Image (cartoon, rainbow, N blue to C red):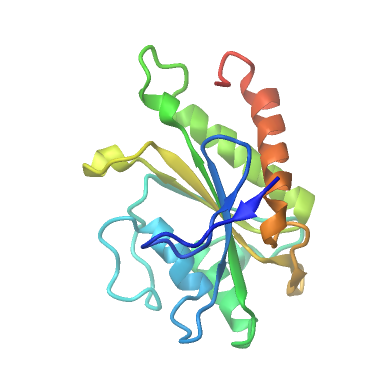
Length: 208
């Protein structure tokens, strides 16, 4: 059972609640003023600190811990860059598409447990594998951004954002909406896929 709650302050989507602990899900949507775009949405996650004055100019090196773009089969190599991917999505929205990016955030508080059962590189490898699986399974692009708030003297556990432009990515460009992912009811699909992936990939000794 899932239910949607109102977006908290400073959050650009309404979270959909579910069963899996330390996982957030929601669809980020365009606003009437046109200020929220795929480019700005993904840019904010890639630059948790030292953000550019504008996200429409060429991005400098992201300030998050790590970034990766996973593409489905047949996608253009030019989209193997997070800003070009986001710009292509915005261009092909023609100013009329509301759903922009599916945001899945997976938190890893166990990274700071003593003794430590999970290392940061293991988290990255685990989530990259999951993102590649989702890209292939659902024919979507996935941008991963790893955040470690403590390294910037900020509260909160390390976490990974999986940012999925909300339309299928075909060899000819973006197609129809990425159902069943791009709806508030489909957090359960992501939860099930993640729980199964983590259990199979990390082993029971790594799963809390």
